[in-house]
Length: 127
Image 1 (cartoon, one colour):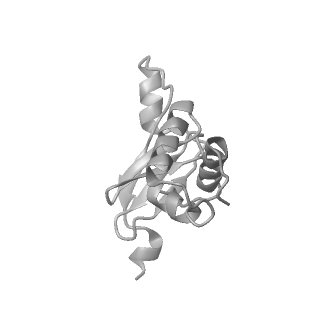
Image 2: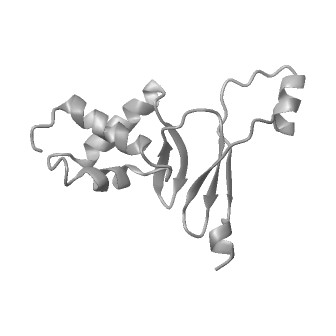
């Protein structure tokens, strides 16, 4: 499919990000699309991810092994990064953390949050 225009490339990039729970890097997205869109460049993927972040369509989760990992789920939730396998996992809790309670009790208004825990995932700890 060589006739991809800029907006169809952009949508393919976004759909690829949104279709996975792996919290992909730009390189991963590029690898997924390069056969389908032969004239796609890694630079185009990076530029579109930057645009998506500006638009609030994706968030940067963490830098893992030198690569920024992103998430199309922009709802408030925390993440866990495994320092062994580099997996990034969603952590969802509807409860307010003690730190969030303390902040609001002291007059702070939280407008967004980015909480990332680091350690060894269950799969790696059993190996």
